[in-house]
Each structure stands twice: as C-alpha cells, then as structure tokens.
Image (cartoon, rainbow, N blue to C red):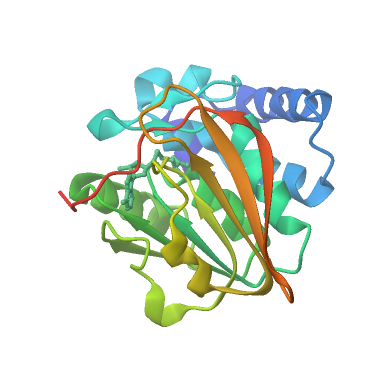
Length: 220
Ligand code: SAH
C-alpha cells in the first residue's frame, strides 16, 4: 500500500503487525475473523506520523484534539463481542481515528459512525476515503441518535465512556443484537458492559475494566 511508504514503515510493518496478532492471541482473543481483520488494517496510518513506530504496541495513543486511539486489545475484544452474532449493519459512536471503524469494515458490510469534534470528523473521513473504506459512513454529531433513521442495527459499539448506560441506544438495536459500552464517564477506569436484546428483555453482562475518554455532549 502506498500509504505505508508515506509513513516510512515499509517492510517492517507486516512483521510488527503479526507480533501484535500473536500478543492478541496470548491475551485471549480467539476469533480468527477478528484477528485477520486486524492483520489487514494498517494501524500506523491511523496515528500521527511521529507515533507510527509505536502503532502496533498494545497501548492507547494520542490522536488529534486530545482524543485517543484505543489499545488493540480493546478494539479486538469489543469487535469479538459483537461478532458472536451475525452482523451486517453496525453502529459506532466515537469515530476518533477511524481505526475501530476500519476493523469493523473488514467484517461487516455496513458501518455507521459518528464523531462530535468537527476537525477530527473531517480528518478521519478523508483518511477512510483515501484508504478505500467505501462501506463506512461518517457523520458529524454528538448524539447517540445520530444514525437513528438508519436503525435498527445488529450491533452497536460506543467508544467513549458515558456516565451511565445510554438507554436511548436500546431502541436502535435488533432483537438478538448487542450493545457494547464503557460505562463510568470521568472515572479513570470504567466497566465495559455488553447488553443483549432478547425475547425476554435486555440482558446485561459486565465484561472487564477499561479506560476510555469520556463521552461528551455538544458537537464542536
Ligand atoms: N473508536 C475510536 C476511539 C476514539 S476516542 C478509535 O478507534 O480511534 C473516542 C472518540 O469519541 C473521540 O474522538 C471523542 O471526540 C468521541 N466522542 C465523545 N463523545 C461523543 C459523542 N457524544 N458523540 C460522538 N462522538 C463522541
């Protein structure tokens, strides 16, 4: 890919990416589809050039506007949680760098994502276009309901932490569908929660502690 030369990573990139996959396996990620998707996506193109050499470490990294790209393990874990069910249409809240959306786009025919910071929205939309992710639709909005008219979704991933579980999302998911949210807002550590819509109602499962930036109101 020409973009790899652009960030000067070239030949070593696939090797460091493979090392990331080995580590994800050691951390308990078992879904081969998810691992293959993460092998495909050039994570170093989703961070600033100065940080590209650290892109395949298992760490969150700063992106523009004071936001972060989530650590690979968490991207894998959230993706794995939704891929346990058939998914053809997925919603992500919090586009950020676009990396999670790109991983989803390898696996799911239609990806919808929203971002509240205009500069980040523009930058990421351009990057995703350049990389040829034609099945990701980006929208500039601060609401969980940014893509309400495109509902229902098979799955929803929220990648910024609200104070409490965003109940409004429940109406956007299909029967059998899952919503994954880091709940806990400004606390340093939040709880990753998976809510599944079943015949009998909503079933909530606590997954593990995570660290996300807070979910905020107001598009800026
Ligand atoms: N999924 C991203 C993670 C980025 S960090 C990635 O893979 O890089 C979370 C992002 O959520 C930030 O860009 C932040 O601006 C955005 N965000 C926070 N609150 C939001 C809201 N209410 N609506 C949409 N995006 C929001």
